[in-house]
Image (cartoon, rainbow, N blue to C red; front, side, top):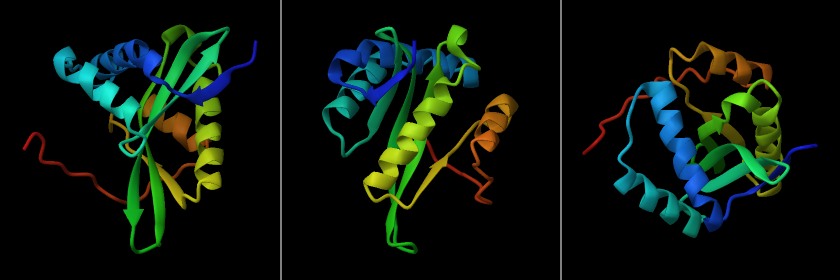
Length: 150
């Protein structure tokens, strides 16, 4: 059965929370505080100005997700969509789930007037790097720094 890609709705919150928990554990070895994660996901789903979640469903079951946040570029006079929180169930990996999500997001971004898509990925996650390169993404040349938490 083909994948169905759609914007997430509040009823998807428990799956998104679980996927984010698993993502942090698998990719960074981090244990997320569910007391922060649950309301964070709920707030995101309630306000599309914060972000958008997209999910991939197969036979009514969510098998993958990604989140999009926005950056205004004054240099380019347009919105850049940032892909974050990418997670695909282990049994659905390498089957085109992320590719389908990415193509849907790319199309949607174009339709909504965005000028580009970016993402950041853990430096050691070489498998993810290869996936993104195969989709036509290139290294941007930027080095990301942070001061977190404040």
